[in-house]
Image (cartoon, rainbow, N blue to C red; front, side, top):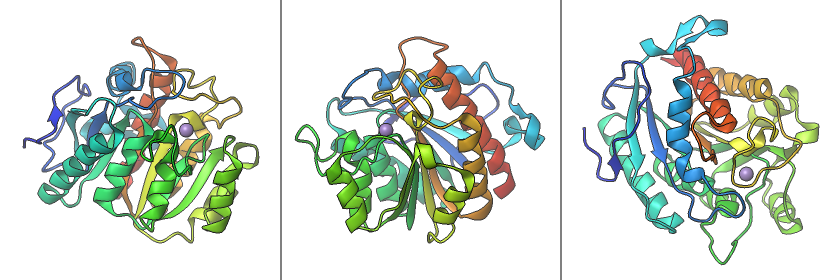
Length: 287
Ligand SMILES: [Mn+2]
């Protein structure tokens, strides 16, 4: 099927399904128009796909070969340069197109700035938003733009979507106050463990959208991201949480955002690619 706003790009290596028949549908969002510090997120989707070439499709610990799963890759969104809202509109419309053709599909965004998650959430209308991030992203506006990447959790909260935020080690007093006043729980990276995750996520209503801002990981794993922060989470900590969500909650969407880097083989993209394969491998359990 053809989508209005996507174009073909490098795809995953193994045989892929058509989007109409796939359970998991990959969509790149190469947008970095409001990046504050370290540019390169526009290359994220391509760098992640390229990094997957380094990985076995067989996931040892699951005994699952993700090359045998119904996965599609519909390419990248044609972004509106410098305009996160209009680009997120294209993400929303693309996800809506996909869901009309294949209501059971779970879109997987590869980004690209976190601002673009808003478009997918608007299309999928989850009851809850679970996010791993170094930053609260609860600002009302940043650099005079309410659709800046630093505002995405606030925009999503305003849609009436319940939230739980993990891996935090950066925020403003204004954001902390907003979280308190609106009952948005968040866990500092220093306090994060699996039990804290389950305790907060268990009561959340379904369906759930899971967003992973790659900067939630310690920056040794993800040096090339828009706003890197020391003191983040380990790889298996996030995988373990993701596995629990896939097994215990109905997921409607997933993303890995803020992957940057200027060259093929970047560490950040390798981390993101491995995470993507673990998500797909865990996803075999819900087919
Ligand atoms: Mn972040």
